[in-house]
Length: 205
Image (cartoon, rainbow, N blue to C red; front, side, top):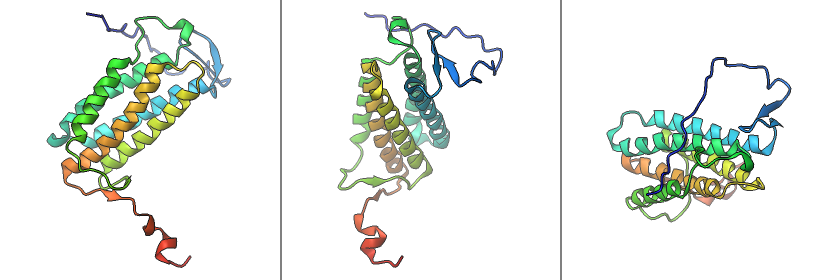
């Protein structure tokens, strides 16, 4: 059986600030100094933003027993997103086999969870609007931030394929999870109705 374990972090965070970023640059894992607006920094910064929103959504789940399966999944996803950040913060030539990352196994697990939860949901006849419950809206925020991270990752000339594939599947998962929580809580979905726009309803400006 293939060993897929990664190295544990070897960090000693004794000071919150170092002043090394005051000139608008930051360091990659390999020690290279790059501008903070570098596409790679923008990419893993967006993954970090996504992780924060996942934490918010996880907190909104609370102790609802019917949502416990999703809470377990989101806890795992937070760790996986840190693994994504690890590989994005490292140039390909500096990566090593045991460095934390996501692999095909993480994407396959997401696919199983998408299929499992989607089986309980009614077929869609229109696009859904975010809302109905706070947790639904927060999961939609996660979905859109994840899509942005995916676009930024795709723009990197050396983007890791497993990372890109994972982010693509994760955004799909957030969509299914947003529907699933409303279904579990008995809250109806709000479907997109184009003729609810002011122009279609003849409302005055």
